[in-house]
Image (cartoon, rainbow, N blue to C red; front, side, top):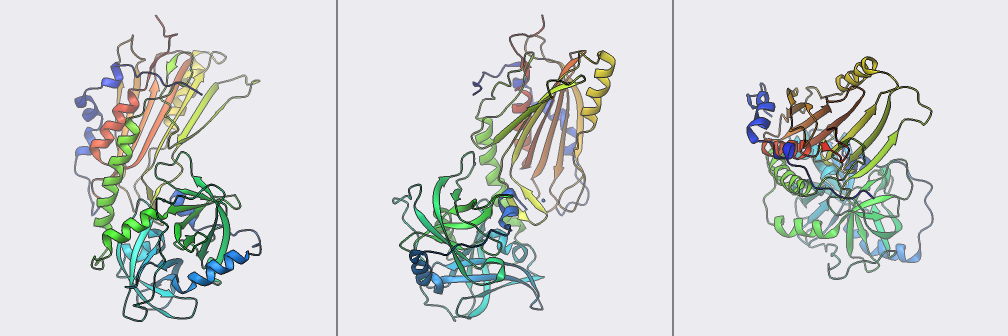
Length: 465
């Protein structure tokens, strides 16, 4: 385990005007501004599971008690019954309040002129739904049944927070997988996912497409979680939003009027709050040591990131490198075309004494040029970039070539994607290339993150004299 190290001053104490100069181009108004599914929500459109095993008598009992509170939620085209997407939900009050995932109803939330929401129950009852509020950070939505058809029907209760589950407890996931039929999936509670910025329950049951937004119940039929995602290329590895967040959304928004018009302003408000929390937590952590013989390179803590590394084979006869890649494994789902709210950090350390200075410089420069800095699309503007050479105090860190780019979100003003690309420029046959990406951050937090990242570069004890 690498030990944390103290950030060196120098680059870590970059003056604000220098960062503003590097980011100067992005301060100009971006033309045409009115303004990828997340790790969690992309996988929530889950893969086909292996053949279902028979459920226990306990599972059948829990399902029979809860079936009258279960709903299938369909997103339909506004003026016809063509189905655009399908998920699940459940009643939580006798006033017709319903909990589901945000990603289940996102099309109707973002484009209510084209889409509408409709529910169906196991006994055949059906009707319309309206959206009251959502928590995009936790992928939750609060809806309400239109009309009085089911008013008075009881809702599922939440398990009290003061009664936490223990690892290995049996729990039961409900929903309508693959639009086939309502079903129950029996599994176990395995605690919270490690290295996750927000709490997420690891569930050893198979959540399939269409079950997103359905409840997961304990032996007493109380809600302990909400189906949200499953892992790619894995069986029996699924994830749940802890019930406490759904209960909080219900309590604070149960009296709200239905949302009118596209939900982009509400999304922007929530995403701005989320990125503040994420950035504050990230910059509070010291960088870890990369164990490079020459350079101190910024490697993040693994509190809410997962890191991998690799190097060239031992028999390599050309350019040698060591690579580290760290990324948050869960993102915030906005739409089928946009994921945001995550950070990733990587570096590659090169050694080219076998190539000589000229051949090393050619390959080293090519690695820098080949980095993809983004492009304009329907969600973001083209990146605005600024490049400069930064000469740190020779005793505090190596000279750097830095490129900083921002892309603005077209429908979420004030939010940007940040790319910081850095390479050392002090060695004839040795160097390091680093990259930092932040999705969905404010301009002020882009400055903070850039300074924090650049402050992680320095010398090791073996720095040149």
